[in-house]
Length: 357
Image (cartoon, rainbow, N blue to C red):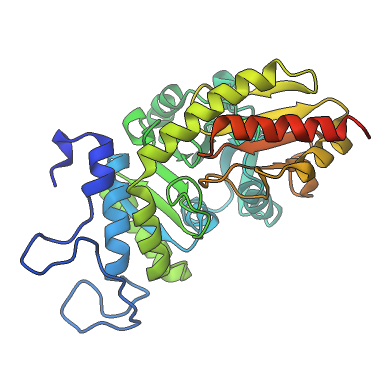
């Protein structure tokens, strides 16, 4: 499949499929084997497995680079962090996925890196902090505050300084943002979220368009043993086939719900970056009312993950690792593909219930 002439939607459906020869399956088979016959690209499944290749082909084509699958999103991020020289500065968002920040803070505590936290939507602050840095880690939109970084400006200045840029593209997906085209060196995904889209996979990925970086990431995956499962890759590939359909529907729902939430008397500070499926808002009454709200929904699932076909939400500060600068009453709302009126009715009913407390 020649991706240069095809839309992202068509690539999502058609990339990574077996060669069209008589009797060939439409979908790449699941290869459940720990050892492979010598003479191919791999003899041992920690080095490579045919089941990974379809997933990597689809995601790589969508992002405009070459992908490597990992056991989880945090395993993918760890592989990038592991490339940073000892004691080198790393710039990262003050608001980011708590697992990422926990990993970076632990490395800083052990003296492995010099961690510099910034407001990632303040480009001047990012660039000032990046003096002498080995890596700038970007989330855009950030989790859970939904701040937007100027990836292109940051990447351009970083390239001039010899600083690598990695972008967590989990919230935006390659259908809304392609960081490699904006100058980033790495793209990282928690493929557990929108890419796979059905809340049944734990998987991560790193994408790059540099052969040198790809070799380094591949070595980290092998040496750290952060390898994905065959079934997980197969499920994520199947999920990506419908990414554009799911994303369009959930995004349409999110826009409408953000508009209604912004006008609701029980809601304040509704945040939505204008694209994607995630809304963040605060509830009048603070943390106690926010927590009660998430526990009252029936259509919306009270859960910590996101990006599935089902709507889900949670109060983020219930997690001890969440940055203290995140408001206590902030709810991260992952909008699904249900009927938007059913979702809104569920929100109104939940708001009505907590108003009686």
